[in-house]
Amino acid sequence: TSLFESVELAPRDPILGLNEQYNADTRPNKVNLGVGVYSDDEGRIPLLDCVRQAEEARVAAHAARGYLPIDGIPGYNSGAQKLLLGENSPLVGSGRVLTAQSLGGTGALKIGADFLRRLLPGSKVVISDPSWANHRALFAEAGFTVETYPYYDAATHGFNFEGMLAALRALPEKTIVVLHACCHNPTGVDPSAEQWAQIADTVRDRNLVPFLDIAYQGFGDGLEEDASVVRLFAQRDLTMLISSSFSKSFSLYGERVGALTMVCSSKEESARVLSQLKVVIRTNYSNPPTHGGMVVSSVLNTPELFALWKQELAGMRDRIRSMRTQLVDKLKEHGVSQDFSFVKSQRGMFSYSGLTADQVERLREEHGIYAVGSGRICVAALNSGNIDYVAKAVASVIG
Ligand code: PMP
Image 1 (spheres, protein in one colour):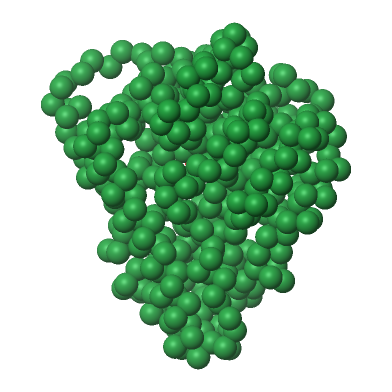
Image 2: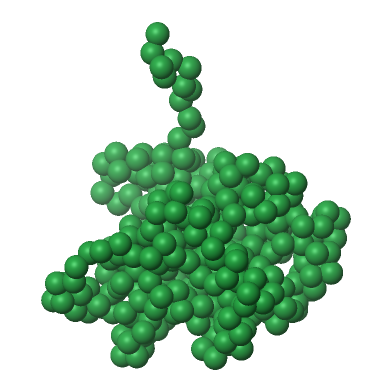
């Protein structure tokens, strides 16, 4: 018998499975609102100008490709820290913050999870209901029991603040709480600043372990604005983990550019924690890849490229905003009486549209429009060429 005889077929990733179906669809006006990728108005994944310039300089330099340090490029890590905690953060100045370049935001979550599993073997992890599907799978694979806290309120298309707070208050000490620091995936619904302050107070008072995940910094209200939750936790002097990603903000999905940042309680503690995190990295993949990290690092550390990046990021953010407004307007134009204005207050790439699984299926079958069964649509995949078609199709399935 074969060694692999007993290996069962794992379920397909539902969103990537959707992509395969989309690719096989021959209808010319098909639209993919499933996958979480930003496309420009021509429907293409952009190559940012700041990235192109940094790459050209790098190619021209004919740089050797030695190994990077285990924790990555120093300028990349300090750049990531500045974006999260602010340009002149006293916390960073105190030496209490450490950052390791990681294989995307996913890699940051994974090395953070592996580190925590060794530190807190008795703790469980809680994630929002709903959350990015890989949160559950990743922490479960790292050995944790994963549960949820209430988050989305379908009745109001909004945030269930009371439900979340009550759940946090009931958690045992040292429970790891995964929080979307901005642009919640999949709902697009974020707590207000006042609500975040109470969430952070509860996390501190209950002695919980915050793990902030920030994969869409710059897609909500701006680079600085979107970091406000990270800073609010930092102000409370909490020790915490932060996974951040440049996949979306630099449109560098395949380069795997992310970072794990940890805020410790002293400089000396931070050195010990980093030494253990390096063991986790070393025994997984040794050290991160060079190219994407070099590109991001040179953009973050070259004032002209940084200014250009901010401008290009604002362009992506504004385009998504405009698609939200247009979608709401066009649904009305096509005779939808139901109020969709909540789509405009959602943040980031996604919208929990409120469409039912049946309606999502009809969109696919009858119109070649692909969305996730939960009703999540990627607003960043709408453009001036498809938005009217999508609005009309949605109007027809809502009936
Ligand atoms: N966290 C969340 C909430 C995400 O939506 C994503 C990407 N879809 C990630 C982390 C990971 O991003 P990356 O592609 O950089 O691994």
